[in-house]
Every structure is written in C-alpha cells, then in structure tokens.
Length: 168
Image (cartoon, rainbow, N blue to C red; front, side, top):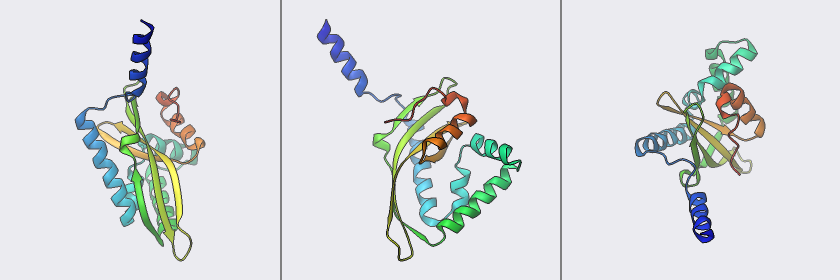
C-alpha cells in the first residue's frame, strides 16, 4: 500500500497544476505569439493593452489619472526606452508553464520568459523573467514579472491571487 501511495503521489506531482482545455491553450498560444510579434515590431500600444486592466486601474487610481492616461504614458515610456532597441530573441516557454485557476475562477499561467535585446552598439541584454497570463472575460492578458514587488501590485489589483505563490 505504501508503494501505491508513493506512486500516486509521484504521478500527481508530475502532472501540471491545472490541465488547460485545448481551446484555452490555443487562445493563450495565440496571445503569446501576438505579444512577441508586437514586441519585435515595436507595437508598444498593443503590449500595454495586454496588461490586465485591474493593474492599470490600480495604478491610475493611485496616480489620480485616468486609465487611458496611464496607458498612453506607459506606451510613450516604452517607445522612448525601446525606440532604438532590437529584439534579438524573445520566448515564453509554454512547455514549462505552471497553470491553474484562482479561487474566483480565473485561469492563469506563469510562463518562464527569456529575451535578448540590444540597444545601439551596446552589449546584448539578456533577461530571464516570468510572465503571468490571466484569462479575463475570454481574453488572455499578459504581464511580465521581473521583481516580487510587481507580483505584489498584481495581488493588490486581483486579491484572488493572494494565496497563489510565484513558481520556483
């Protein structure tokens, strides 16, 4: 019996946190592809539009600005910072994602994300981060998490993530 319990436990640990349905997986893959294309082509408005709306609303409330003003400002800042940049590579690792559903029913996925970006003659900057994908009203929203503080903002905007830890 102990062997059976150990086998069952090991099989359970090997399973993904949440088996995503094929249609949801296809929608997420499409959102990821679109995000990567937008980053590579410099379509920063589309990148900003992918941010979960609750995060934008939280920031706009704290800054006492409209959500549209925040989106416009962030888009302009990205254009300034990334204007002379070339995306050498960008990948969200779909096969290594950790996914699940919040207690409120929101599907999510944490995707390991790597990018290599060069600016002018400077060295190529390599970044290894996480991207959080959230399925809100049938639309996958994406937000990169480079620091734990960013996840704190997400949790403030979406309290249903309070007990969902960042993957190791």
